[in-house]
Length: 470
Image 1 (cartoon, rainbow, N blue to C red):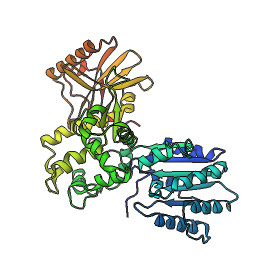
Image 2: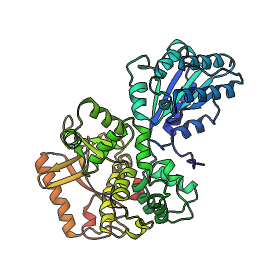
Image 3: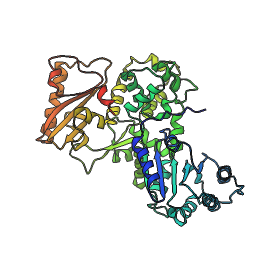
Image 4: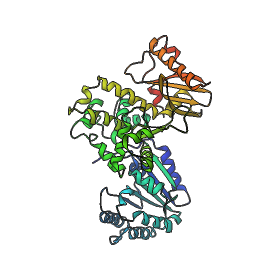
């Protein structure tokens, strides 16, 4: 039995579902996002598993098998023996007939993993169009909620389709992984007694994916869990990589090719660089990049002063970064690989970069810790002649935060040489950008800075406690 994630957070998403339930018209709600992020669990928990009809698509099944499953679920719920539908038009006609028998309450229908029902030549979307446009859209009591991990289908055929379903989705819920604070709450409610340093390193490996967190064993140490999940033959996350892409994207090999190209450079690649490495171009590459972004695998960002051109694409999914770095490239077959390499140079190099990615996922928390949540700002990077800054917060109050991210197991000691490096880079930024704004050196690190004569010269410091803000 697969572990079920504890219900944590999701306040905005629940508010959207509640608004749909309380509206006076038919609702077509689409929930989408990365595999294992908790889409099904969110819907089931919100509705307390009380649906007038619920069915889930079957991965890799034929149209005959999908229709048989649909009919079986309809018969169970309606207590009527509908004959197996010959096609999707008949299946949705049967669903309509059943829903019409329910007179005195709201109608809730949940179709999970809808993309898997759309088998080749099944005409599923055409039948769904007819069901919605000819009847369902005019039923104020009806609330139709659909989910799907196959992002290309959800975004191209349902949410962004140009056919009969164009603009039919009334609410879109993009479900993201947990934040650090939500991950901490999940672990606490699961009985784990881990400090924020360990939770951060866990996040650097798994991200905030609820299903992955549910695989952890509280009787094991953090390192024992990583050894078991990634580096043993039966490790659940040792084989997740291919399954992940196969379930999300129709042409999974093309998506993996782009992801693995992005994995080559930590700062990311321009579209032209991706084209040169992969040989892909045109609308196909545009769709791949858009879908990877919709699933939180990559982020699109701009360099300072280049808002309209020169977009960079950077791989940010923690699980994927860890898998490609350690499991696939350097796996020695040692089931204790992670424990044996925690002091290695490869671990240190990875942890610095992985911590940067965690910080980039928690910009809102960094701003809150700095007391600038209400200030309009642009988040970007800067790369100039002789220096690079991975996180620049360009604020509308005439201040720019130049952020240095340091992952250390003890308070970071700011030496004279390091302070001079920071100030030199600050002056390079000032000179090369010609900005007139005040430049604030900012360090995002694990613990408060060790007290030195130079630590007092850093005006802004954000620690793990700041990153864990809700």
